[in-house]
Length: 295
Ligand code: C5P
Image (spheres, rainbow, N blue to C red):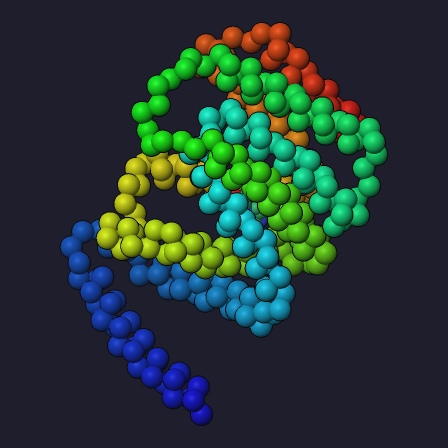
């Protein structure tokens, strides 16, 4: 009975607002949208909502499973900002690559993957390769005087270490859910995103609630900041696809390899010099990659 009146009341409001808003958008000056396209778009949206409702609300127990990685990823994404703001970029890159090892550990514990001693050794060498490449880069950069906000090294280090544990655990947990059922990777992402948004909002309110209420949600969003955000969103979806078709350990390989790529690009763009140490690190990384992929 309750639902009967609630639905009727919502219909009253919806109908009135629909007609008024159609009238409003049709009488505005400027470019006018095609009404035939609006009819099609409404149909598509309806299908989308029906589909989502079925998989998210009806199968809510399944949805709830994603709350765990969502919570951890939200924490991790916030911690990464703390880490990068407090550590030099190269130091962050190196320490964050420890996630290669945490990922392997959780893959063994949670997915029962077996790694031979040689494979563990390869992962250690991979980490060493990344560390050499990055530290060599850092050594070359001239000491710049810090003009920004003060940096706290210890705080940055703790943030990055917790991020590594979180990355390994959440990544493998997501992989387990993804590969343990027939639900599509897109559905899993939506389920993850729902919790991620809610938890992120909670963190935002807790940490910056007052300041955001005063200055606005989009305060300080320059085009560059938008770029960072788009990159992060795209990266997240990419991780999901990589984990579906490959796995988390290979994902770690790809990101290690990207460190060589970005260094080589810097050589061309910014005139960095490649020396013996870089060659050693890069050699280690590609050696491990080649061997692993041929196993
Ligand atoms: O460093 P790491 O590989 O753990 O980072 C993974 C990133 O991908 C996180 O920012 C996480 O929020 C995102 N992600 C996502 N959707 C997934 C899996 C990960 O957005 N299904």
